[in-house]
Length: 114
Image (cartoon, rainbow, N blue to C red):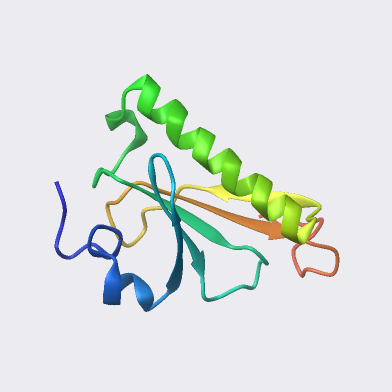
């Protein structure tokens, strides 16, 4: 099921306001945020328009996190961060997504916990 008001479902103009498309992965589509305060800031939006990861089968969830790991490897290869931060947020929408971004030396947040 697709939601016509969801940027990740509709792609195109809605998602172009804040991200660039990167590639289709096994379980979703990978985007790089235009705002790069954390170098390599990415988001993996699941193919299904669902709100919670508990709506996935164990196999679907494992495959989704395998894609998250692939994206993280790319962040490490390109940016060599000290740490990659991971988060699954749904503040403004109900589409399962996972965000990743790096913490590199000189970043305002390296060594800080919030």
